[in-house]
Image (cartoon, rainbow, N blue to C red; front, side, top):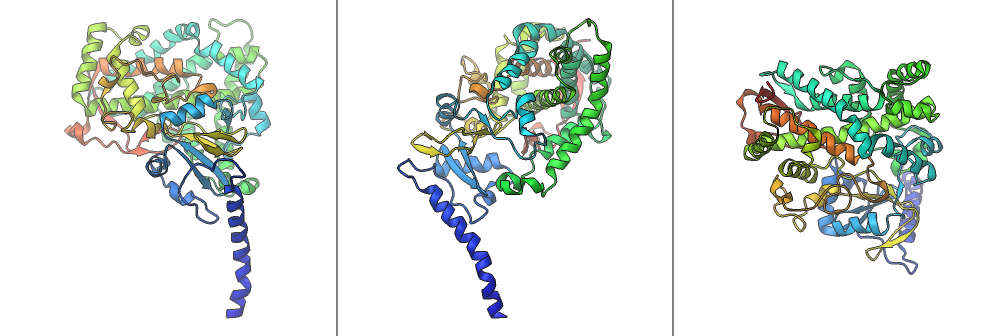
Length: 495
């Protein structure tokens, strides 16, 4: 029996020795600077055990030991993480071209060649086709002229939200779900001239709201295929299959809308984005891909930020009072006007502070190194996954005074903004891969939050003390509250 055990020993030792030799070979500098520092990887697993359930917080803690540019090994794959404004400048400005490629997680079900033709977010390089799609979206959706043309659509959805809340006065409202429906319908009317969810629709109802929420959760599941690409063909956890099934169910909802539009033909009263795609000869599959990305990216970031901002205002009544006073001076008993909101300094300071403290994408979307290069006196290998921890930057005491406090005043008489030029505040990224929808997001955030604050007083159920409001986070593609924000509205304006 003992002999049999010794005969089995090489079976375990040979892979381990091979792995160690690969580690030593990869860490050899060959005349180049070393890799960025990081925690010592475990055999086979690398640094996977270090990541935990809240990787943005874990990586922030590790950066305090290993510095603002770290390198970890997740299985067989390198992960480089920047955690300071200086690192952000290097990764997204100085070496922007080198890190402009996208690391595409294995959970994404579409073929990469097809993604390169129809995707904005998962196009793996900044190709001519990617530039065309960005230009199309910018001109049709995010330009100043397009945003002005859309304002009446957003105002209509704001009116619907206010009327819905007035009917709910004194009742407990799931704030996040209400904002989700409002933002989704804003996008639905801009993209395809129709509401896509009901204000009363619950996640468990099996409609579009539940499907989108579920797909956003599935794509954040740690996937063994990302750590060991050899296993990709097997989809061992079934996450790609699950994502594909969810996408098919979402597409089944949109397919009749697209076909109806194709058959209708002729000029419409209002040209929406769907009409533009049809006129530009997009196939149904490519329309589906773009719509899915625009709905998920365009909605979830705004929803998360508005929920966090309201939670902070409820928890800080003195700040809420200042926002009330500013809105009352400007609008009195009227609904807030979208164009004027961008000029209100305290409201905008609150939005910036929410984005600093609770960035919707704490690690942004993953980049990939196009080639081996040197950054901050370290070597970053080709094809390494590159992340920027904007959550850590927003809470860095060397960058911000009292970083854990919600203090909008820090942005008064300060020209820092979130549009990609101030590397202390990058909730939407920077450089070539900056989110193209920042102009729309800025308007959505302002008009929804301002209306909810201006038209209603908000209190916690059962007379709970606002200071006891649970502010724990739940990690995902967007950083959400672990516990839903349940509030009771009471009308204060717009009678």
